[in-house]
Image (cartoon, rainbow, N blue to C red; front, side, top):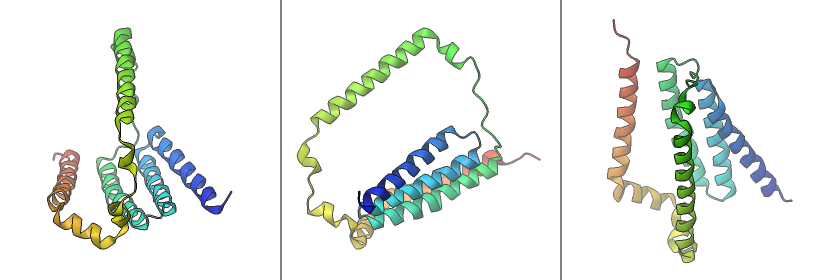
Length: 173
């Protein structure tokens, strides 16, 4: 086994364990820190895929900006622990609700299998446009010309979310 395979298994294990820790943590602060760890390991996987720009973008945007926003919200709301779910939630669904959820889950699984069977295999073939994705100049030009509105709309949505968190956490005097 070569070094890149060993690095892949290490980064993959860190990503999976940290992601499971995010879901399983009761303390939101630990959950946010584990999410940052998961993003860092995912950036390592991108480096192994020879996509350094994507790896750096993963670290700067997700671990740097969005996770700081999450930490800000968690610290601002001062939520010490997750409250346990009421014990009657599953009982309130009853056997009919659980049966309906099972049927809907199976239907979703069948739809995914059907959709994947209809995908054209040529769609995954590597073409000239796919090889130029690692060009930082091309990505920057495309982002700030063709996708400028989506870029600005996303920044406004993040700003609105932060203002909303401040308003929710404000204490009445």
